[in-house]
Image (cartoon, rainbow over all chains, first blue to last red; front, side):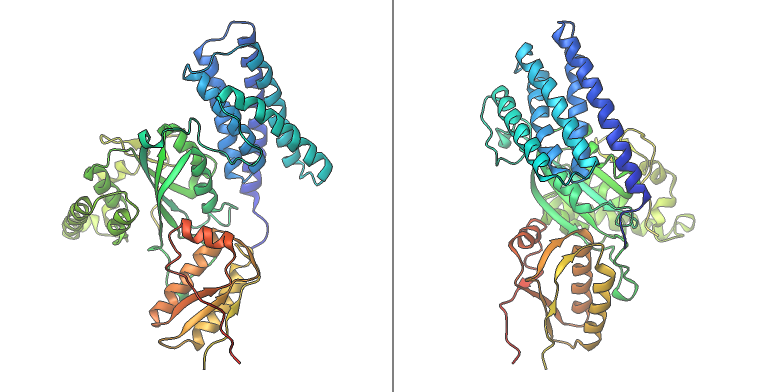
Length: 344
Length: 100
């Protein structure tokens, strides 16, 4: 396969454009803050901008942008949580930070090869990271890797379950499923990860450029569902993400298994990565088996490879929504209407 | 007669999976029950999702013949990646063996 195709390039262009717009919004918000006219929504808006730029640049493997913007995001996170007051000094550092993000984006967009310019920019970024780190109450060394915002006290953080299934054109569209996992690591700590390979075709029909991968991920994080969903924003239709809040209820896993009826080993995988306990998995499996048996006796639902999907209630459940148990199934957060595609 | 290790040099990424699958096809045709196919990963410097998927597919194809896949010389970065995805046991790491 040659270079990433047009869809990837378009997404990248869109990202650069939107990032610059978001930087302008951040600067406007900073001016408002500096004039003493800002409120909590001003801070939230700035945080969202930094978070989106960081998240999306992570999807595109722009490590320099991710590393720097992460630090900005962490500081803004403290401000929005009331742990840090905004003052003229902070505003000044944040103004400089916006300039730095813009510079890093420019160099990335222009594929800058000038080692001197790159090194100078990195050195300036490190200095700013040091200044920002004072607002976090600790000093970050130059080698430090991005850690999740407010990274102390992991023990108290909740563990989310994220079930990902990538669509066949994922590779062709220039996306690498591993980069999504890499990005999720910036939101917290991955405490369980299993590769789902049940959808891999037999070797004779195996097309190595078609993606059949899936992941079951346990993510310990303080992030909100919206923040987790943002990891999948730019990959759009190439990934079906099902996000289970930290409830560990059997009902959530039954719903997950019901949505993936072809994956007979999912129960074992969920137990293996710590998503469900064995009892829940057995319960899920029994429920799924029972469900499958029922569907076999209903002719109108039995056509196709995923007979259950013909059922009206299942069609509804396949839409983006948060169900009664809080389970979310989404593509491209924000549009709220895209359904997971059934494998053909 | 043991099958010589397959040398994976450079990238095991979307750019090369089609080419490598053809190479694996040839190996599969020669593989017999009980064989252990070794991938020499010494020269590997980049592994992406497509490469990982190809390894999984090849491993499954070998398993269907009662053969297995092993690796040798896997660089630390790829070992870390395999460990992160809980695949270290799946792709056991062999010590280099001389065929002479």
